Length: 131
View 1 (cartoon, helix red, strand yellow):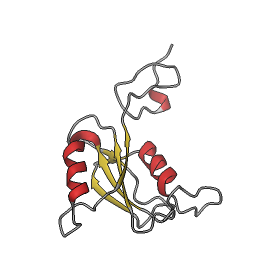
View 2: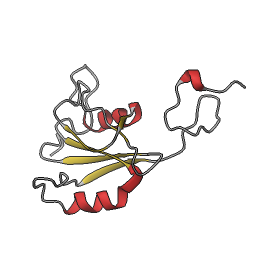
View 3: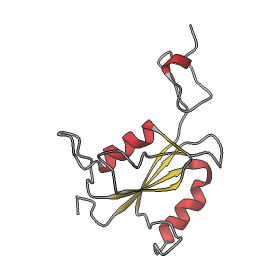
């Protein structure tokens, strides 16, 4: 099934701490109604972009994702090992995470246009230090 119908994809985004997660914006027009925010406190442009690559419904011409009918579960990386285990074995009951069979993990160090490493994962252009 290449549409992704009936499949739930987990999207884990790098976080600074176990309690502060960055995740998929569940109000994005290409993802609305298909994102379950499991554990995030802030939305990330990067996580939303990744989710769109995976599952955009193509509401804008030329933007359909690889699995345009898939559901998405959004997590931060602070407790990823436990969350992956719980989601893999979940039956999807009340209070349980949605079961996932596919996942994406965006972990890395944020590098700005100047090539410098920043402490924050999302650094606005205005915060880029001068050369």
